[in-house]
Length: 393
Image 1 (spheres, rainbow, N blue to C red):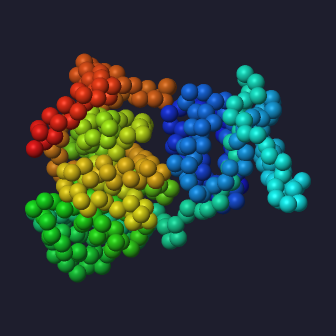
Image 2 (cartoon, rainbow, N blue to C red):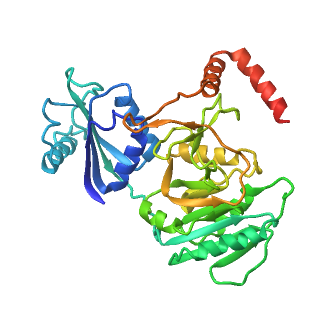
């Protein structure tokens, strides 16, 4: 953990600003500072930066300063120079105080640089630590959801987990199975509403019973590759909600994808993202979730949903809205023993531009045009929603 983390000219140059803020602040220790020098633009300005921080880290920081800095202040920056700036800001609110109000003279808030080529500086102090007691990359709870129809696959999954050689782990099977009477393996019998596929309840039961902070909750059709745990070590223990590679016979199995919503309706265009990419509407398919037990308890699966009710999308939305943004670990892989969606169109990624390119064949362009048209026309939008619901029935 660091006393101070400093960045210049990064936050305003990429759509990955939320990820940068998440990673930078992870590095700051309690009582330490995050300092960002930037020139506001369409990608990030005064208001956007404050909204991002509140979204991602609400109630865990105090803004020390956010405003213009003198010309040249952002040049040749070192730790001593930055800390002097911070101490001067904090000192102002401790000196020259009014005897009655105990406040210094009001300083007006300025949201733009003092001149055309000027910079803004954002400084916040970490007030709360997010490290979870007992959390470690070598401690894992694996939860397997089943309805009793794939016991042979469960044997393979349990064997693959045992072969990972994780120092501290447990396996919880929830559904219709049997008690193996083995160390590190537990069974939660549950078959209520199995005719509906009440997997959300099963997943919440696993979370409630979990011993360790790191959770990997899977359906009974995903098996970890032999190097899955090594890939998690490579990624590290600093995550909140995480996806990883999923394949079926070399074909990507809805492992990293996003959808563009229409007024929060369950009507969307599904696209696979490049593993280096990210989008605000990215979500994790329900067949696998890697997340912290603490956040799974704060944001449980919606038990009004059953299988195929977009329960995974709703979980992702709740986590995302709380600032626990979904990330992707390309170093770990799960193999799908069954996969029903076929090949899904992908979105090209230009690493030089660090942005997703919403372009492609006519089959990709026309749906996007239709989507934008629908978003602008209320009557046609209502008609499409009505027709879509009828088709779903």
